[in-house]
Length: 325
Image 1 (tube, rainbow, N blue to C red):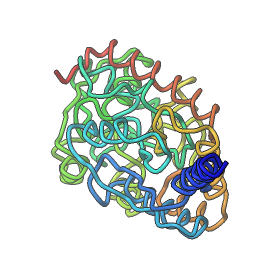
Image 2: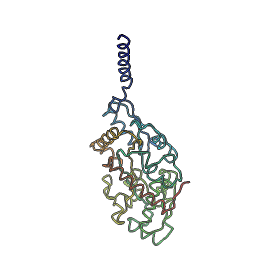
Image 3: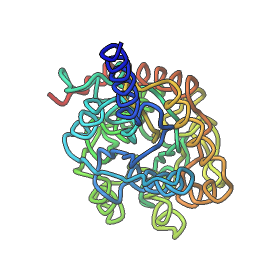
Image 4: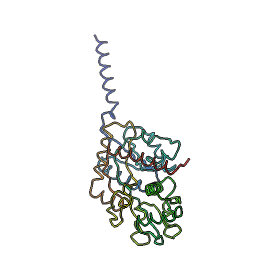
């Protein structure tokens, strides 16, 4: 009997050791540091809002949430890093229109699948764009700009932050819907384009409202219209383009995406906590102060929005023939 008892005891001890060796399985998320990958350099909008979200999540969770910038390749380097991360909920991507909604249509090959490698968590902000003009341009409204473009087909130029950016494709959508011909002048970033606009070297530009608003408020530039469906709280005097071009809407966005395969309860935790942060009055004030719009989409609703964005920018890229290969 003694050998049998010893054997049973050994099995019991082994079982207890096995349970004790798997503490992580019983731990509730989050149990350690989480990271938000931003596919752009520090200082850009996605980075700014990722850091605000990380700060609030750290306070809520009692665990560090860090921001990791993985810039380059039109957002592809960071997006790939997030897509290849372990699907345990400790890595998310702070995505935006470029790497998620536009890149699949302008590059023949991506190192990630924007529709299959990620799961939608929550949108943080909508980023209004604005068509803005140098005061020398003889157009003060959408109606006058369209009349000018029709009277000078192919002569009116508009600048943007670069080919296949939200600004560029918002301009292409505008000309397509209005049935006018304008010439795109791409720059290497919004900053250089804005400086040339202020100097009168170009007379029209599609830019982010955040970037252009100070020059609009000072009277150095003239706002033609914002690209949102409705007027923006940060600049209510600027009309929405859709007021004179029905159906027009072209908005940038920033939102968090998890890694495909992340446990559903962890996805739900990220989604709920991010959505709650965006609803906080202080957070909404911080977002609005930067000429952005607090978002309300989370979970499946955010997923449906991403599907519509994929379809929209795919259509615009095809119509304009925009490719970056």
